[in-house]
Length: 318
Image (cartoon, rainbow, N blue to C red; front, side, top):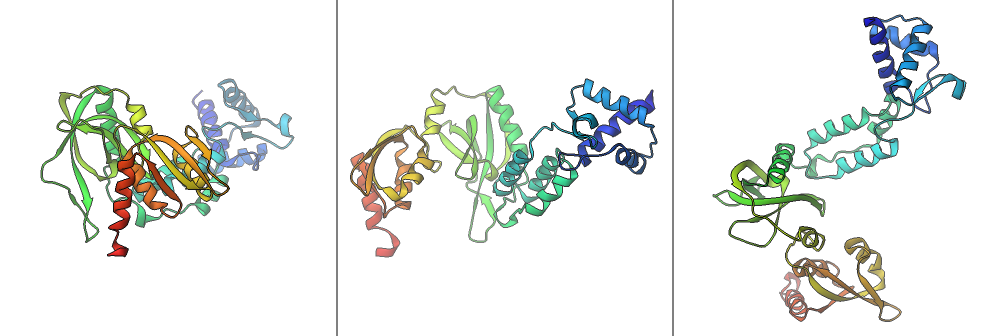
């Protein structure tokens, strides 16, 4: 009985690691792998029974009668295109350290056959120079998730870069916050929270958080979180405001990419359009300055005045 169980487990591992739609395994190849990898020598009848058992247990296996060549595992946790997409995402996320990026990618690759895994290894690039050096990122995420679930406050040290390119505490005392959620914005992963002494929402980069601790105190309740986060621009939070801008047509795609389709667009002339939306004003200020040749903030007036003042005081005109 133990041998039959071992054959079934080993057969699954062989099909998982060495078979796919482009690499169908004849029975003789399966027998050879059994011997080379596990020093098992089952006969064909035992292997047929093992395949039948795997199919009974819900594994989707293409059989010889289906393809006239052999056997391969059809269904996997992820499709190859999904693994490629997730691998590229892990490579590009700067908040995941390089070593942990490699570990994640290897786990993703292990959901596919070794043949497809080789293709992923040839394609992937992990740019260590843009990756955080904070090894506590995943621990931070676990602890923050626990605190959010239990509705408990947390304390932490918040770090910042200085001229020597090293991280130092932003201030001597730790931050004490009410955690509400985590969100990916502008290529960084943020904790959504507020300080006990400051009612407005704040966003803190999780890769810059160190020495996090769960506190016994219950976190304060917060309403309308979704609206406030959806209106955040460049990680600036706050109450969303009605914004009106005039933009050149050349950045229409950029406007939709940034703010989505839940905005009002109206044609001004052949070259420009007006856009009305709700967003945090200071985030819009920095976005508008980035697109200075193509964007004019119209409303609110105080925000327009601030943009004008920033243009007057920029480093290039001093």
